[in-house]
Image (cartoon, rainbow, N blue to C red; front, side, top):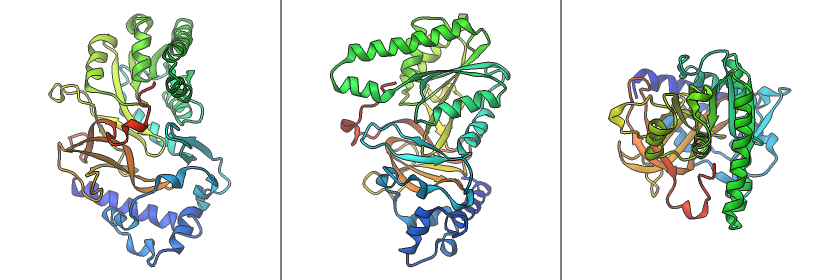
Length: 352
C-alpha cells in the first residue's frame, strides 16, 4: 500500500475509534465493551495495525438482539434500517444501516461506465431482496443514476430449504417462476438497460432471451461465489457485448469492486475493498494474525470502518488468494473468492 493510502487509512481509523468509543456518540455495544478493557482505545489505537488489540470480532455478537445496541448515540433520532445476512447457518446476523448502503453504492456507481450503464436508464433487479440490503441498495443505485428500478424477488432461504428437503425439481420450478417475472418486466418496459442479478439467474435468464435483443447493455452481478469458468462463460456466451460488473459484497462490509477485465488475468475474478471504509485481507487459517503472501490461499479477514458500524478483524466464511495492488486500486485485493473449504460441508452455497 502506498504511504499516502496508509496514512489516510490510519487517520480514518483514529476518527472511527474516537466516534465509537466516545460516550456522546458511540454505540452501546462498544461503550460496554470498553468498560471491560484495561486500556482506552481512544488513547491507544493510532493505526490500522493497532486494531489487533481487539482480537477477532465474534460471529455471535451479531446474531439476535437487541439490535439497538449497535446504533451509535451520534445518530439518535435518525431512521434506522436493519439488514440480515443469508441465514444459511442458523440465526442470521443483523447489521444496522442508516446511510452506509447509499454511500457504498454511490461510490460503486462511479466505477460503472456510462456507455454500458447509461444515465437515466431503468434497471431490473432480479435476485434476493427481503431482509437483505440488496433491495434498497440496488434501487438507490438506479435512482442515483437517474433511473427507476423494477424488482423481482428471490428468497434464497426457501431455495435452501427445498434443497435440504431433497426437492431439486421444486427449486428449479421456483427459479423459473422468478425468471418468468423478470421476462415479463423486460418485455413491458423498453427503457430497462441495466440488470442486477446473480450468476445462476443470469444463466437461466439467458436461456430464455437474448440480452442484446432485449436491450440490456450492462450487468451488475453478485450475491454468491463466482468462478473464473463462469466469468469466461458469461463473457463469451451470455452477455453478447454487455458490460459485466462483478462484485464481492455482503451485509457486513459493503461492496468490493471488480478490477476491470484484463486478458492477463485469464478471467480471474479480482476484487478490491472500498478503502478506508473496509479492508479485506487474506490470512493463514491456522494463524489468522498472519497475512499470507501474494498469490497464496487463505481465509478472508474483514474489517469494517464506518461511523455507523465498526467491526474489526472478522473471519469470513470465505477463502481466496491474496492479490497485489494495481494501478487503479493501490492496496491489497482478493482473487477468486469462494466458500472457506473447512466450513463448506455445513453450508448450502450458490443457491442463487
